[in-house]
Length: 110
Image 1: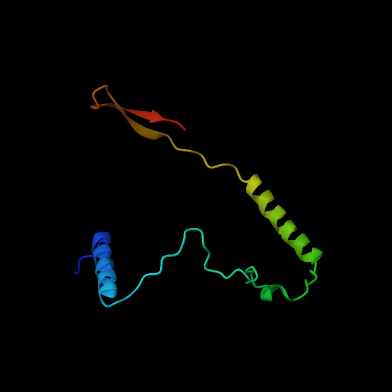
Image 2: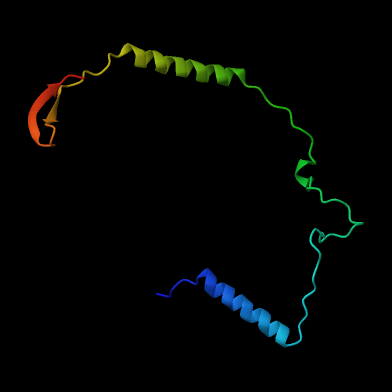
């Protein structure tokens, strides 16, 4: 398996590439801080509105479908309420002493 490249290795590689570029006669143009990459006469960048060109569609209301769904929900909730809650069984719990040693079992009703 190949070892992953570390940040220091990447930094060394970039510095070598820069040194090679400069040794072949390359030139780096210094740009003052705060200068934008955009030209002064360019208009501001605005988001595209091509997705919002269609007019707003009217909604179709379906009250009978909503009423049927509400009725079904009401019927299910009434069925659930009519059944008694399940009975919980007593459970055994191990009681430990102050030193973490098992001491005794107790039955707990929940």
